[in-house]
Length: 393
Image 1 (cartoon, rainbow, N blue to C red):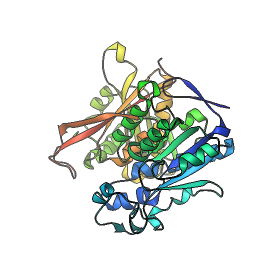
Image 2 (cartoon, rainbow, N blue to C red):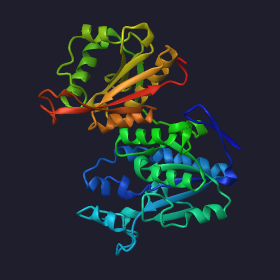
Image 3 (cartoon, rainbow, N blue to C red):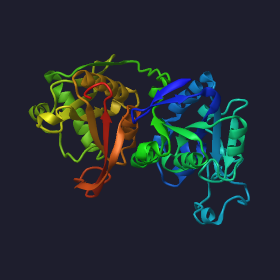
Image 4 (cartoon, one colour):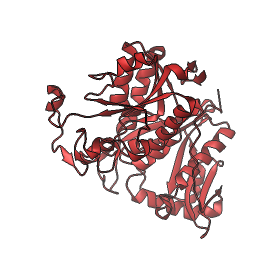
């Protein structure tokens, strides 16, 4: 028996002999950069980001003796198993570099390379959102003596949630693994999880892979060192901040201001810079701003992470995020907050990878100044927070 502590603080047991891990729709059409979602104008970055997490989870399940089941959404080439309502919503055009969208046998219908089923693992081809719709999954599970499901995959707000609801109505106990699920938008993902866990877990429990003690991926980041920020770093920090402002996708701010203003608006510690180990140049920074002067809110801070153009794609953001989380918790800070433009997918992926959840989408809180591709437009902001399990209560 395995014991899992869910988000609601309740412990649930997992019996490997009676449990299956259902990996939902980790297909190229949803996840690939040239798949259906991308061809239809969506950005699947948040979906791609969970592939390593799902891979770790499936390996953990195999090692624990838990059956792994993979589902694929798709249809017969002649569309005979597609009902009229879906046919009416059929994307147009219906093909791309990976073939006809969601048609069985086409490259886009297949699983991503990192998540191919192993020999003996079930593959459930489903013509609907839920894994039980017009499939034999229910019969196969009962024949195998399985009455509990762990669920992960994409998308949280559609096929994952649909499968969990169907399973609950059929008498299965469900556990949704949150950080191994994703939606195209962070707010859709987290609202779906809130619904699953609502009313005392009406559709089962919700946990993270860390609650299952799945091994964290080893982040291999070479050539970058971290150290505390000093006043002497001020000019370079403001330069990186100015570069971020110039992208038009980081902040409503129009200029970085003075070092005195920056220094006054941030906590003295933790403040961290990432340094190229060869050149010695600062390539990124992380700092925290208090959200209120009232003592009751002393443990809530807003996080700022900026990476220079030359330092992007090297893992500096992940290193900075991990370090500032550790140091903030050691300092007794219990909640980190962030506001991110919906179009800033890289920042959303970074925050999501380190345990931030979406509080919601704030509609048009500010008018973008004449900077970047959204100049002069009212813009939404995604509000995120990370609640520590170590600091506070």
